[in-house]
Image 1 (tube, rainbow, N blue to C red):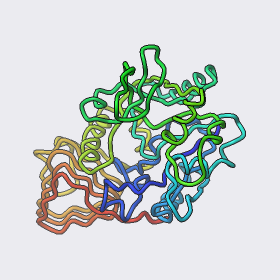
Image 2: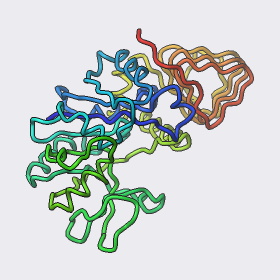
Image 3: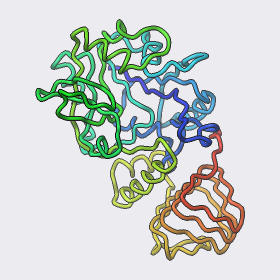
Image 4: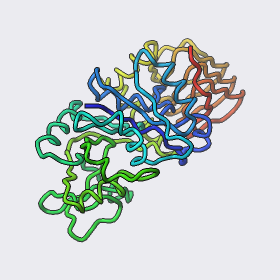
Length: 340
């Protein structure tokens, strides 16, 4: 089975950060988001990813981490094709095995069962489905008005979207992974399209089976700055609790990462009495009298001037904070990754 990462989007809700760096390449705990979902794929996975927004920056990120990740790249071309159009554009690569897996480049998911992709594939083949969507139960569907995969009392998918249809009993949250049959290509139109609205819904109307594979875990929203920071806070706590998944990512991409609490011994002149947790990359510099509060994530080559107050903030690679600055609940700096 082949795999496709959807990585062409503009990440509009994270502007102005995503005006310089595409969301798939944006670090989360100092690891580009695009490498989080890849951890759930088999080591021998053949992957293609599509590009459009800031394509050169995305390619530089791939080149920088080539020893950890390899994939073919296909461009959407002069216009963004959407999820359905991106898949259709990669038809020549994806077809041939009968089925393939598509996943979102920003799927940040702490799975209780790391083998869920293989289990979803087995369920997909067993029922000869057109598509199998990996889902979890999540109360935020109702509390935050998220879109959902809606099922009736018999467990049949009856709708995809924010509105609960009259015959729907349960709604599930899609975590960004799906197993899809080659048959989808006859439903997807050329050009821009959405795989749910323009592929799955017409296929369901034609009698094809679109089903869910239910797993468990926690999915993290990173679409805007507030959600990104909230997810960072939660994930740092999981890292402190020695999450095997998160520790593996750090060791793979930043072997010299360091995780500090206020009781840690620092080799920098910082006030950490109000610190919960600090995650750092390999190299950073700090002036005298800097105060850290709550959580902080410092990327590579970050420079913080003397007398700064940093609280619940992420400083991306290359960020420079002038002396006596107050940085609170912010994402700072956005240097395009360099190939080293």
